[in-house]
Image (tube, rainbow, N blue to C red):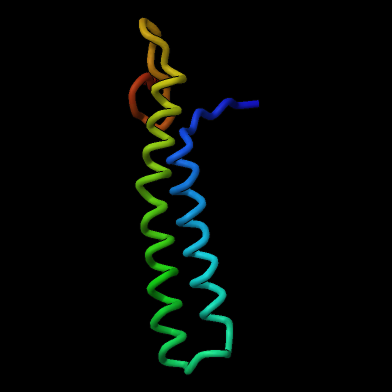
Length: 88
């Protein structure tokens, strides 16, 4: 099992972006508002939720990479011709 270290403000940001994404999807599928208003608000919340998630995911992935590479150790090898690939 992997250990993930996330601060409380990061958890709050993740929850807020997930909430906006969910509300956006809910408004897109609901029929209580006028169609134009519902679509405008729904797509806006969906876009904010989806786009604001990208930096959070990138930050977490970078943090995990930093934690997995200990000082003095070699970086992970790749097999697609990148760092650490061998010719043969």
